[in-house]
Length: 325
Length: 203
Image (cartoon, rainbow over all chains, first blue to last red; front, side, top):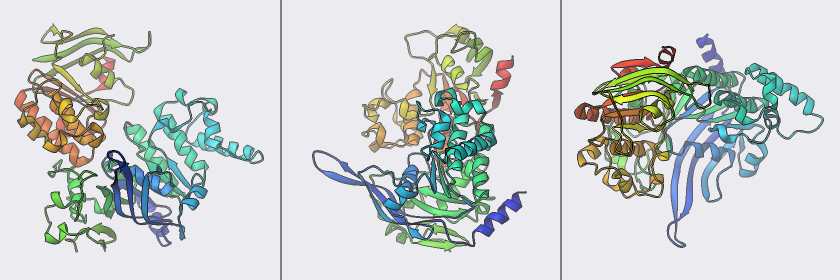
């Protein structure tokens, strides 16, 4: 069964990426004292491609700026943010105007927190959203159908968010994305605090969406969850993506992984060696000239401290490291 | 030394018990895992053992003695979200030394860097804050540590770093640890013994 899934997703790969993120950097303008401003860089030189029918997981530690990537794609950054680089959606440049036009329709966000629902609005109304009077009937039917599929009973339609459990709210948020017939779904940390049963269920929803032909970007800090359902995993570290690996690369001692950080992450999992490397992720206000992983790297050389390593394609994956071939 | 919770019952609403006659025992130097589903009352049990929740029936005792109020509690609870357990208007060095002056040895063991001490809590990541929360809880008067999902929000490498430090320290200080988590693989790796919330409740 698994193999069949795999083959279909591989087939979909023949076409172009639905979303291309090219070399984006993001910084925030902050006031330090009085009128003095500084620029705090949170994302740098990040590349990413999402394909229809595939799940791409973006894995990185909490608070490292992964959510900002989602917000940048949707164009919902605060006004003091500066975004550099370019994005392409379906072969067209994805500008701020374009983002505003298609978000909620072709691009859907499944937010991180269960507080994103309007507490004073009945569930079915906020899932359906603003629609024309003449479409209302058919959308209502669709909503009921999708709710049925996710095991949300008819009485849920007329409930308020506080009457639902965490797991039910999660299902409502997923339904919103399904009903919107989005082609690109971005799920921002959908799993924390879920027990095993709920986790499995939530993850299966994303698999479902990918099988229907959506491109799914799953942003998470839980590499274990990402490994269960994704096709590719992008490793987010200190504001950039160090490696984009295929799911099969995560095996044994991680000898097929390209970047030393990814290998360290793999070996730190409880089911593997549970061994840690020393050091910490650099702080956002530290200015780093070379590779972001330089301090903690075991295979570094002099070149690594000078300039960010180029993005290379190796063995079907992408990596930013000078010392792999 | 044993921390014992005996016949603990608790409900947030009248006649709606989420814990009923729960018994749990944790010895010095023991690392005990506690696994349970969402909403099964794990966190509530933690709060009762650490003295945060008073409105329960049953007894919590150390070697048969009730834990006194108003003095340093030898049972210390560490939370899932350290950013909610520190005062946002204090610098890290004040947060760290609130209950006792943390010796350099503990700072080294948790890898707390000197230049972090002058930062505000919002300038540190969750994993870094969690190290502070642990260091400040490991005073010589602490006998038991209750870790409620403390590494759920950090990456795998930081998780190993934090647990390595904790296991070193508790071994040396002969502290008993209750590890609460959803992650069975983590619990299997860390703990001597495992109890399931569902078993505790049925007793």
